[in-house]
Image (cartoon, rainbow, N blue to C red; front, side, top):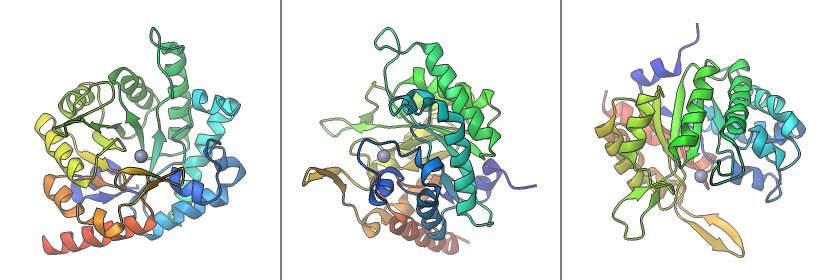
Amino acid sequence: MKPRLLDAIRERPLLADGAMGTQLMLAGLEQGSCGEAWNLTHPERVLGIQRRYAGAGADCILTNTFGGSRIMLNRHSNGDLAAAVNRAGVEIARAAFGGRPGFVIGDVGPFGGLMEPYGEFSETEVREAFGEQARALVEAGADAVIIETQTSLEELLLGIRAAKDAGAPCVIGSMAYDVTLDGSTFRTMMGIDPERAAAFMEEHGADIVALNCGTGMDMKRARQAVLRYRQATSLPVMVQPNAGQPKLVDMKVVYDETPAQMCAGVVPLLEAGASIIGACCGSTPEHIAAFRKAMDAYAHQTL
Ligand SMILES: [Zn+2]
């Protein structure tokens, strides 16, 4: 039997992958077009990116299905492809490991709008879209499902429930925090702080609490979040910070933290107790390779 993700992180911390969106752009995806559809139309390009992450030493690869819910796909008139896009996403991520052991984490991003009464989407629509996506990911063999870049507990809960109802072997809830203007703390756009998110996720049956993306959430802030999560919950913690702050250069968003700069934050994250470390926007296979070295050196030193 293949090892379960939750068993594996009791043995050692795991390395996840880096950004997909910014890598898809480098591979020729136009800004604003549907990157998830590439799972069907250009699977070799998605595989090429994920193979580089596997080659860099990632233990976990997130599927290219961030915007793979029917509601998000509908923006590109691809809603009816939802199940196929998600199944293919799992198959490509699995293939990226080239037969070696590795964990495929099915990625569920925000549905991209607001729910009633603030927005135009009913809770039922969102529940059904997340349910369809989570079922496709689990049926295709995902080792875990991550509900990521979440800012509200209502949407997070719909995602967690969808993943659990689909029978996901492991459910990860991941919040996007923004550092406050005065720099004193961080919370999500909807005002949720890490303690509240962690307690909420534990109460609703998530297996791992996580953070990803956000604004100003560098490796140091991620470490603070790990410590705060661990004060609030005994669940394992996963982090995927961005490669620094986004900057606008020639009308393009650029993340300029180098692998060496980001990598300096890896050991502090391990010491704080992070169980899975990856990276979000702007990170590359080179960042992940540097993380691998740092994690291996740390494991060797603490043997
Ligand atoms: Zn990000």
